[in-house]
Length: 187
Image 1 (cartoon, helix red, strand yellow):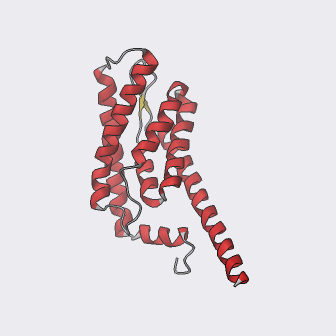
Image 2 (cartoon, one colour):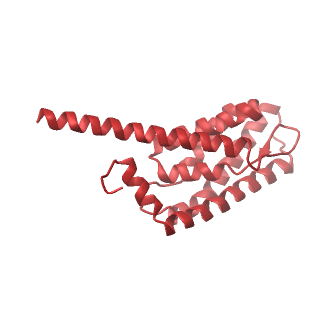
Image 3 (cartoon, one colour):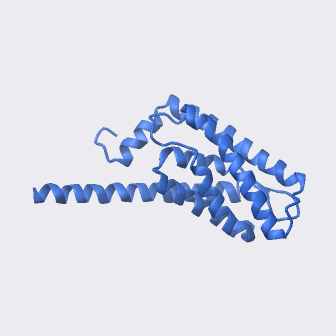
């Protein structure tokens, strides 16, 4: 019995390590995609359009919530620290919020909930950055370019997410990743 507990403790520790490593990889990919790949500055407020949210959506689908929240916050926060530091505090909160509409509990990436989730994430992101811009710049009269940028960013990220999700579902990647995350011998 004592030996069984020790084995379970080692397995639990390895599983947590695998999940933390996966979250770290997602955070790095989110930061790079956000800060450097398809990074398009717009407006005078330091904002920019990017498609890093697609990787946040994927993290939300592949990782358990606490790990996905950390990956989103760290990846988005680091990207802003590298490019537009004034936005980093708001980004950390907003990127965590956009994880919430997604579900990681299914065998597929593109479930009905995950088809709808990017639209909820877009609303959360636009509202969050509208509020942040009002606080940062002392005015809630947001220029149209800011809202347009949010829509382009969220829409582009959704397209990337749907395309990658469809490819991953065809290749049955989600089940393979889940087995790895739980250290299943069938992986």
